Image (cartoon, rainbow, N blue to C red):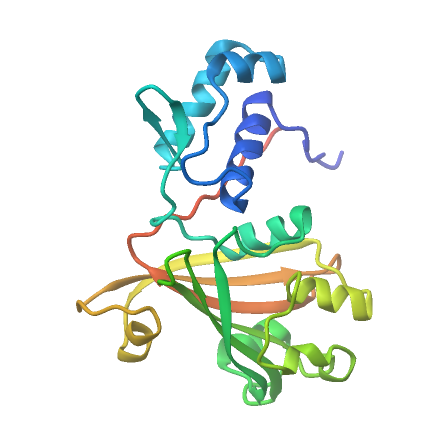
Length: 251
């Protein structure tokens, strides 16, 4: 008998995921009060102990802090990195790519010879033309938070010309591709590592003290058949945090 995937989430994970997404997306802003144990228990119909576990995990992830006289509030997001996974999910649910106050500048966009990694992801020859978009994202205080490069199949240039323009695409590149072509993503994959900042990377992120460690990510959006719609590489400061949630496989 073939194994079956267990898709239901336990109550703890549902509440935790809901609050985490509200914080990451900016629906709950820095300093906003997070529901108390008592309120979470009443709103979600869960035990107080489960509600306490949710809040403790958010504290552990440095998303919230306990503040005397105010209860639990959203922490400063200066050390939070909004990964591609979080941005794509936020765009899907809220229509916004970045939290309020965060923004991106597109440094370049157009056809370029595909890098080794981009060619492997897109299933083309290295050096073959592909669409390349480079951007830097900034926080509320205009500090560089991350830099990234996204790659797309050259065939999309005619049908989604926005990809070739060095301008922000409202709603994100996946939405633009889906709207124009019907090609939609179903799954995402992120690989995360670390490296020391090069001179160019340090300049992009405003790093002045060297050597400096970077968090490096490689992400792919795939359609239902596993074809890559978008391949990206990003860098961010090594002291930033990225959250991933996963479950133990069930029998």
